[in-house]
Amino acid sequence: MFSSSPFQFLPPHVVRLIVDHVVGSSRQVFAGIEPNTNEWNELLRPLLWTCHNFRAVAYPLYCSRYKLAIANSPNYQLFNGGPGTASFDVGHRMNNNLGYPTHHLARALDIEIDEESIYSGKALKMLSRSPYDGCAFPLVRRIVFLLVTDDGLKEGKKTKRNIVAFVRRIKQMAPNMNDIWIRPMDCTVAFASSPNYGDLVARLLQLAVRVQYGESSTLVIYVNLLPYDFRNIVHIECITGAYEQSITGCAHQSFIELAHQSSATLESLIIKSERAINIPSIIQKEDGDFVTYPLLHTLKLDGYSVFDTELTYPVFTGVVPFPSLRHLQILYEYNFGDDVVFRSNAATLESLVLYLSDSAVSVLRQFGLFTPTSHPKLRYVRLGYIGDFIPSIFATIPEAWQFSLSIGRAAPMRNISLYAMHTMWMPALSQLDGLDSIQVLSLESSTLNLWDVIALIKALPMMSDLSFEPPSLGPLPDDVTLDELPAYVISTYAPMVTLSQMLIVYAV
Image (cartoon, rainbow, N blue to C red; front, side, top):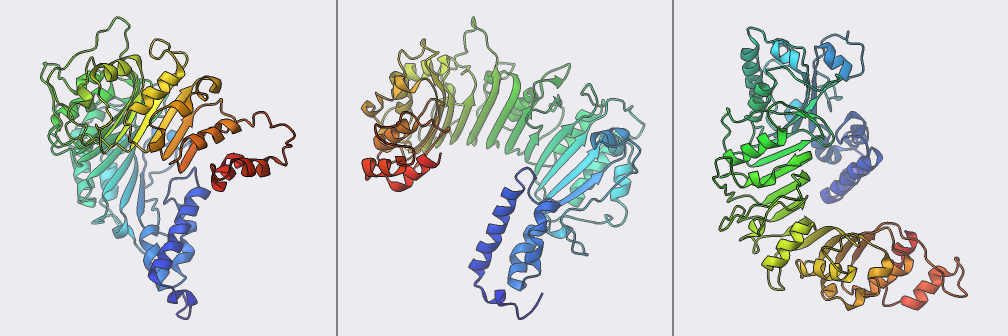
């Protein structure tokens, strides 16, 4: 670092813009690498030695994440692709290449660990030795556990005691942690865990008020959370794969039961599963009692619902489970016979993502949930799977278009999944009501051509952002070559279609 560096005279807000640009660029360069890995920090390191001003901004970012790899069992070595003979390893420290400790600046902590090292007490011993004896992460708010499971472990005399001691040590290291994500990983043929796995996971989750379990396309294990006391949980997220090792239930069902326990404080609930979800159980317990979530503002449900053509969906007369809901996402068959999900939250709803299934359309029509004056705060609407292959719902594609526009009529941002030939819906587009309010439109349709896109731009006078799948060129006008096309479009459609819009269309 040189005191005479000309960069030291830059205003603080300019320095911040430069550092933010470097951070943004690095995320693009390393798109497949998690931010704050060592590769990511290679781009930040030069900023540390530019001048004091740059160091003050870049240093917290450089040291924002810390990683511990605590490995002992052959199963962990198999997970890492090794032969299973590597020695016990603690302390792969991320963002600490400066020659002195930086753990006190970390805001997130990643821990790779396996079951055996916890149950045997070896992980606790290593974390109690130098340099981790007394080591603390006072700024850490989030811990991500990559937990390697092993079904070959037997319960020892001190297993449960070691679990409790390990969890207590984690709490001591990160006393202000309130957010935890457990990512169970397995490298054996049959995904399984030891008998103590559920106890370990439940005790770790008890440390936080924001809990997340599993991840997309990953096999996870059912964990019985009912015997444990959870208090003041505000966020629950459970993401499971297609198959779950369980003899008693699915992983997501245990987290729905956790939502019941935390209904008074819960603010967001996210359930995504590649298995069938019993959605009504979120509202009604097995004993028949109804559950109300007075503070819940975000509800996202994604997966395969329990489907039966002979099934009569339940009706919840007078029940108001989500009175404060602001963000609603339902990407499955609507499993209710009435408007219970939408009840009493018209004044608060801000975004809606909805799969237009037969049952959803039926309920929306029957109860007249969306009127021109309802839902004044609704800003974003995404509707999925409008197509010509569901004539039982919509007689024509224009009818489907008009119905979709009637949902949150004043919402300026829309995403519509449309599966139909453009010749079926483009001619009637200009005749639809509600187009003048759309500012941002995203279309998922593979049948658009260049002229369809131009017609859309002309029909949407307030639109500032239009995204779609790459359109085909379509037929060229008479006596116009491909090289002449940009000039032809500009001269023919301006000013109805602005130059920036046409450049976007042509680039696509």
